[in-house]
Image (cartoon, rainbow, N blue to C red; front, top):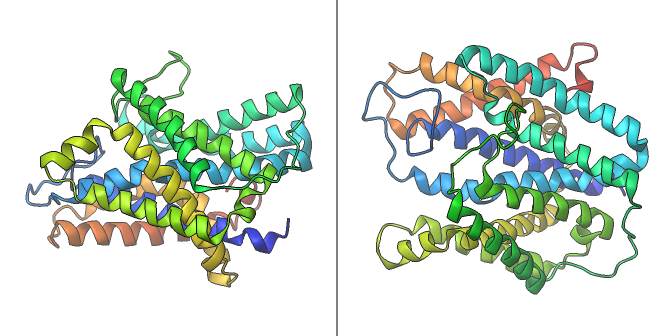
Length: 341
């Protein structure tokens, strides 16, 4: 496939990385779960930011897994099993060990924090390699393409599964299912991650992203945005109770439709080929890895500076983004580092 045609996926990953950084930037100033820094000033609180967290959590990591899955088949086909596994162990395993070890030392407990995504992606890739050693790849000669009905059925299966999982393991409940093996997972979202990774693999095999029509893409984006707006409109009352009751299904619909809508949007309007976008794409993986520790250090440093909760959220997000991308760029100048970052 023409590399230029896939630039939009790199550009979308850059935007998702920015969203992750700003999501984490806001966690200290709202109900965003456990975080490594808490403002000393209780006035630094943004009451509405939980809507932002809720929309992000509904889709952004699932979309990361879809995009990652999309690149896996061609990588395996080109390199073969041995080289594929070796490169994944280097590119995913080394940052996981280094950053996970550093976070554990600094926190005083065994912890990998945001590196759970890197670890899960490594596990998914290794499982894919094992399956490919046993089974032949699915045939690419398929005329199917994404449709609204198809996306609805896919999100419905995801939603029903997520609904029942959340009856025993609610959102934000993390477990270590394999005991001493460090594979932390959030069951409430993990079905989404697995299904999005798999659909990414199938999308590459069957050319679904290229075949998706403008009508399907635009309608998907409209539905996804409407569902996201529905979360921002939650503020008690009947609507809030309804969404909360069926949130596993609601969130799955949001995830699938906004993800395919964004894939269409970037395919049509975000396939930019400029030095700036290429530079950002090259640094985005490292920025994801480094941003968390840089952010917590910055938040502690700026604790006594008053700029309002929202002002600090924006400042922390922007400053951490710049430093994370620049740090990655500098590290990638060291010989051999590009194989990892």
